[in-house]
Length: 610
Image (spheres, rainbow, N blue to C red):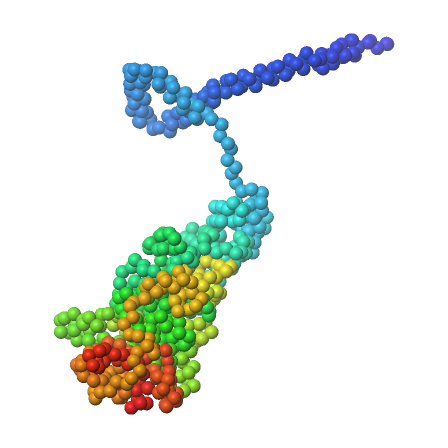
């Protein structure tokens, strides 16, 4: 049977092809597309308003559905009353129509879609961080492990944020309940992993929430280093050690940094009879700012009290305090330090006795027993080596009484030393210095050994002078930046810093060593070199002086200052090591010919000449 031929329309499609590719059809397509675009542009406001009215209507229906049934009646009455008022107000319907159109146009506008979730690079960072935590936060036998190789990191990381450069800025993660978050070693391991994976070179703060089993990592800003020594707005008994993070303390002080005045969060150390940490210990590496901190404390203490400085290093860092009002002495030699600290010990006992007698008599304590006395000892262990070599007492022996009873006697002790010689500090110094400061680069173990707790922050990449950690008693460990307080007599000190420190120094009441008269003063009555003599009788400063005068004797007069035990250079040549010259000597004010005069001398020199 022969096949029938196919229809022409199916076998020969040339007419359809010609129609499809004809020029007229192509022009019609272009015209239709142009008309659609033009219509879209013309009717775009109407489309936007319509889309907005649809969204407003959906929001209204949702609001009506969420409204409880007992409140729908009052709501409907309120809407009807509003419509009636609009209808009665002149031009009310027109204004209402315009308002509805405006609201629809605003609600129907095209919004740029906000990118949610981390980018591809950020996702890789989070996944790598998750995989690094798996060996430390997983355990065998866990039926539903939160951390597992190839697991879902979104379950573990609750919150995260990145900066503009793509580096991790904040991370909040969950950890299993069986993780030993109460042990410092376990915490330190996790913190080290996060520090390495989040990027070195920045400081991170770790907040452990044991109740919710969560850890929050936050990037900390660098502490300001442009704050110099100045008058801080504090009360008597408050000393500013430095400045810390705003979230760590609940107080700010107005400070001047550079050319602007701003508020900065301080680390305030409180001393006095109500203080729980009346004494301070500062440890650090050489050149990390321990002397700067002690100099800053001394300048603040001179506002309301007297200061006694022991410079064990003997470098003259406290020469700017010599002869100033309120500075009882600046000693840098063994003989002067022993005599001065002995006087401070007896002065503490005298204050306790006088205060006890006044309370038993029903009166107030004498004013001289309530004036704060500060004993600032910089590197006392350096003098301990000299004392052992010469067979003399360790100067720290005389700090025992001020450390144990200084709080009741308004006596505060500040000791600074280095890590290398910290083992030479006496037991009373270790036991009674509850306020601690660590300056300079230090490991977490060193900080823990000094402060009693590890820091909750990672060490900075570059440690500026005066940067460290502070802990007052059992309070948390705080980051600390000491205000710049350089030696104004140092040639390397800038002019601005020199003027700032010089402005805080009290007026000079006694000329510096070598500035006073050189002729001897003769007389017949002996005098205590720690006192200021104002009588017109002549004084012989070369007679033997009793610097061990105890305050336990009834009717003993209080000593106004410490007798120094330094020797003048001339006396040193005559008596040898016993008349060791030191930086600051005892001073005696006498009246000769009606003119006040100052005599510089030490106990050893006086005894040698006598």
